[in-house]
Amino acid sequence: MTEVRFGVVGIGNIGSMHVRNLFEKKIRGARLSAVCDCDEEKLRRTVETYGVPGFADWRELLRSGAVDAVLIAVPHALHCEIAIAAMQAGLHVLTEKPAGIRVSEVRRMNAEADRHPVVFGIMFNQRTNMLFAKARELVRSGALGKRKRLSWIITNWYRTQSYYDSGSWRATWRGEGGGVLLNQAPHNLDIAQWIFGMPKTVRAVCREGLYHNITVEDYAAIYGEYDDGASLQFITTTGEFPGTNRLEIVGDRGKLVLEEGKLKCWLLTESEEAVRFSSDVGMPRIPYTYEEFTPDAPERAHCGILENFTEAILEGTPLLADGREGIHQLTLTNAAYLSAWTDTVITLPMDEALFDQYHNEKGNSEQEKPKSAAKGGDEEHLPRWQVNW
Image 1 (tube, rainbow, N blue to C red):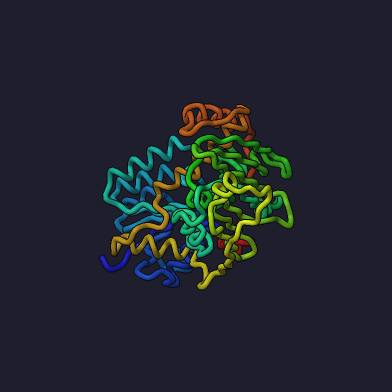
Image 2: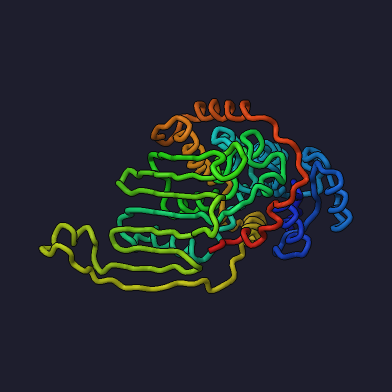
């Protein structure tokens, strides 16, 4: 194979961007070969514009023989079902985030991926950001020493009521599966665990409809603890403006701060812990070096993940975002919800059956959301498809 034929399933806001990127040959070795959507008018316009076959049913696309890989960009509840069917059809799979709505479903999807010789990726496009990659390198290399704390205030995900009214599936437990933790913040939760690892326990507060007329959470605060005593603090919302994007990572050998497009790095000349117990001075100043990092190349974002995924198929290149890793972000989200619903600390691995029970009850108790012609979808937020400082 010298070229990967892609079929895009779901040609809404983000899916239509993937269609354009593939059609315009922005991804080396990739070609747009088919599109799929249940909206007949949207499908007709897309087929006319790009001159590729169109399918109203994703099952027909999988059986068509027209594609080697599918890019799944449909509402969250369908991610796992379509991915599993595509794997069983021998197709490579790249799914949009989140991996799914429930960890139990994603666990089955990951097991299916292990049964087939296909490449499975997830669109965690913020992993292509140089600053996050550099922070991960510094933490994983031991340059920061023993980890202490990761704190992230990520409140610049502002959304209006019009945004939530723009789709009947948005901001519902049955359709979207959750709120800010499942739609906007998965990128940040993924980056947090990608850099710092998964905590052992999770405690969370999730406020449903705090700022908007919705049934899911638009504010969340998560506190996680690790076996070694390190901690994670994570605050996010879609109801503040202007928002903040500030990530702090602290170890016993230094500190990182990512904010306003810069990574600031303080590295101590000796361990703070060693000084703490050996110094005869009450408040010593520990010597340190300071350095700033800024991106040395444009962020490749979605095109970067697509290109890496294509190279994995054609050349065996390691995936930057393996689809199986989507379960980590979703675990944090599911655990936060269960903690908020039960007012308890959740130990990982969590009780997935209990979460599914509560999630079913949340979905069954909400009224069906009427269809709306309101505008305000992600097409108004194109800059948000890269890291927004």
